[in-house]
Length: 175
Image (tube, rainbow, N blue to C red; front, top):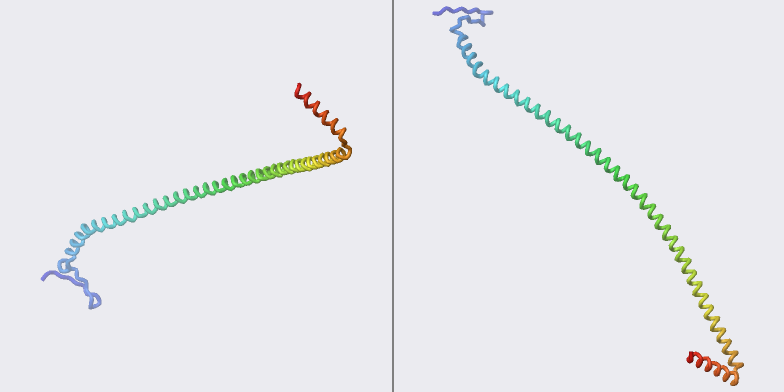
């Protein structure tokens, strides 16, 4: 029998110090082999996992940076759009003011032109009325002259007027 030592603790539990019986050496060798090969694989897995996590962090950081850049660009575009909108509003106000002034000026010109046209129309109507009145007066005067001539015209005066007209006619033909 091999040398074996065991310590009994409290009667039921003991500790065996025989290295060959307890296979501590076998366990140490197996553990060393496992740690050597599996440890490298485990270290490789952990290194890969660490690299994957770092890559994910870098990508997340890069995406965050890109998002910040896009946000800045969007804010800049918003500011530019707001400035452009303000400029358009100002131009619209200027255009409205110009159109308003032009409308007022055009309306004043139209009123002036209508006033002139009204004056011309009044003058024309006044002239027309004067011409009609003059025509009526001439007709009335001629009618009165005819009546007086018919009342006073005798055959001797009639012959004298006819002879006078014949002389005037022949003199005008001779010239």
